[in-house]
Amino acid sequence: MTNLLVLNRASRHISTASIYLTVITRWSSTEFNYQDIIPNLNLINTKNAPENFDQSTAVVYNYPEIISPSESEILISDIVQRTCRKRYQKGHWDSVISGYKEVEFAEDSLSNVSQQVISRIRHFLERKHFNNRDGDVHNINWLPVHGIELKEDGYLKPHVDSVKFSGDIVAGLSLLSPSIMRLKKEDSSDDSHVDLLLLPSTLYVLSGESRYRYTHELLDSGVEFCSDLDENSSIIHRCKRISLIFRDTKED
Ligand code: OGA
Ligand code: MN
Image (cartoon, rainbow, N blue to C red; front, side, top):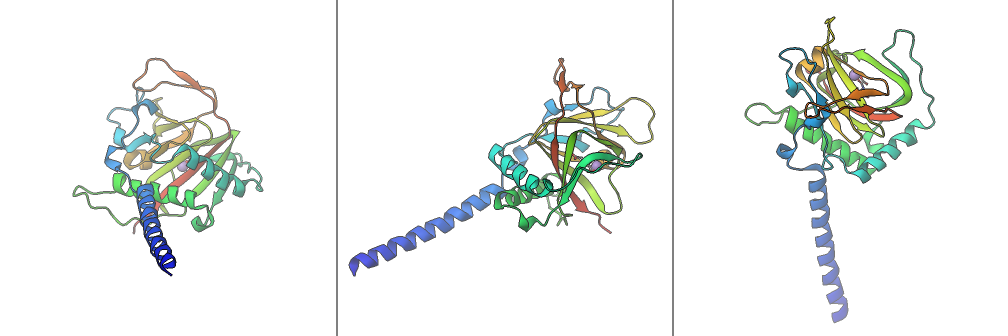
């Protein structure tokens, strides 16, 4: 009898402890000190940028707090499970994208880990890219996350994302392969541009003029990248790439 009581009491403690543990894990996986997370200047080249380019509108973050290596693997496998039965789509002659597979998923159909990564990134974007001067966070409505798998010889040509449905930011989590994203001022005929190096597991965010006034595209494999902080360039080989695109809804 006494033994049973002790056991009961012990299991009550254990279950209380495990509730705390769950709460702490949940908290730490969606919350981190977003103020400490700053754009990585090794991943941007503004040497050929147009005059007065606002660098805060095109940034790349490279932090394991955003997505850890093991989370990347789980996310990739979740996405590939959904793309593996699809065929690569060919673009028409004038299309922006070719050699790709596209998925839009119900988030609750993904693994818990992938769901956590998605809500953590949204949380981060809300706090870092949508807060007003008083530090208040707007209530953001998110479009469903969009997954794109691009073949090594697929392409994504210059375009501005639709302004009809999609709101003030376009953010992308890059997986599997590095690539270079080039931004060019719309309607400009000169060669000025800004390059972002999208390493696997990095998050890029386009807002303001980079979202609305600049086109973005992915460069072919084998192009050189040299960051603002570097003198030496390296050649970036783009292989099969997966991206997860985060967009807020357009406000009326
Ligand atoms: C897009 C796009 C970029 C990426 O789908 O509109 O620009 O990182 N994608 O896949
Ligand atoms: Mn786009």
